[in-house]
Image 1 (cartoon, protein in one colour):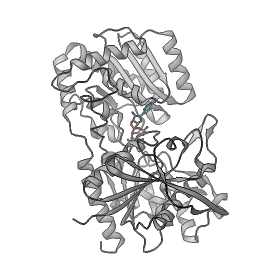
Image 2 (cartoon, rainbow, N blue to C red):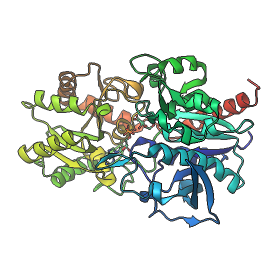
Image 3 (spheres, helix red, strand yellow):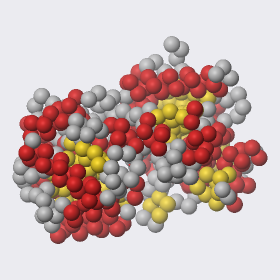
Image 4 (cartoon, rainbow, N blue to C red):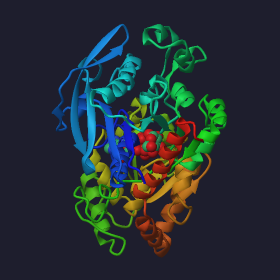
Length: 472
Ligand code: ADP
Ligand code: GLC
């Protein structure tokens, strides 16, 4: 089949910059597409976090029209796994900052201009490096203006929604300074606001999201975050493609972050990982007690309040908890306090990739009590490491966990329901060890790599190209 030229536009990409699962996906899908023979390239902002990544500067600068003026932009070229080129657009006034989307004092106030810059910059870059993509694959609201700015006769566009809860909403007073045509302004406007995701959902040739169930949920009033009407209108152009995981980076048999490695045929190393994790965190080193892990952004979406409620219900049971996360200040405080005042609970506040690997490996159970979850990767990583996930049956969690086969599921959004499910799972760990180990081995052997997923995107791109050319 013909080789495609594909441009990814996103705000994050592992291992250059990551705040969540979006970075994992953008760092892993392009190498899998390249392995299928495609010429795939990525455009990212050169966030401060990206500056330590090796890159060569290209002749420039590139002029990107934003607001009243032109942003003069340095262009850097780096490479990630498989030799996939990444173009980093440097404009320090917009991106040389402590955080990616905000800092200790909150979200950055100028993100409209930061990501208008990214979208216009990506299109300008194609001319600058003489790259004419067949399809541009844009991710989330940060890149959602690309389909709107894409000129008639330009490439097909695919917009992937990783999280409908973040739309890029700004005051309508900014509209005149965005320098859009009246038609583009209509795409961008939504109930008296500027809404970047809505604009992309209106204009992209095809739409995708990261699990089949989430693709259905977002078409309902409950899950649609105000955009369900538009998504229902476009339901024939919307598909749910389940994320994969990078099976090389997340592999308990080779993982250099672990004190011991293991595989489904021999779980002895996992017991060593558990003891080392208990010791590292200052938990009593006991093989018999079920250890529950949680690695998460501490955000409302993730049901952290539910988790805290569940801890109350579980107080009488002999369980341990290992938590890693950062985000909501109240949650950080509660976790710090519990760590200081109890012997069975330890939290580390912050972002720590190496520790996350040690928790996926060292825990027995893993809690994911999300309010909603487009796909979710942590339940996939824990399955890969033989750590049995206890998840709420929503979105991609529902699609990737089979109750009593690869994990445990509960439905009701309450601390009580999570506590019951964790208690049931802990009981299985203690009293049905053969069944528990069967679940561990089954999950570890599941194939969750990107190759099959890349084949689905390949088909989606070809459909988008045919559609854009008016053939479908
Ligand atoms: P989301 O993108 O909504 O945060 P996902 O489950 O898709 O949720 O992906 C989360 C990713 O971020 C996973 O790779 C997870 O290991 C990682 N992660 C979350 N919190 C932390 C943290 N505090 N330290 C290190 N990695 C984290
Ligand atoms: C988002 C979602 C998460 C998903 C990730 C990668 O951050 O919240 O569910 O796994 O994107 O697609």
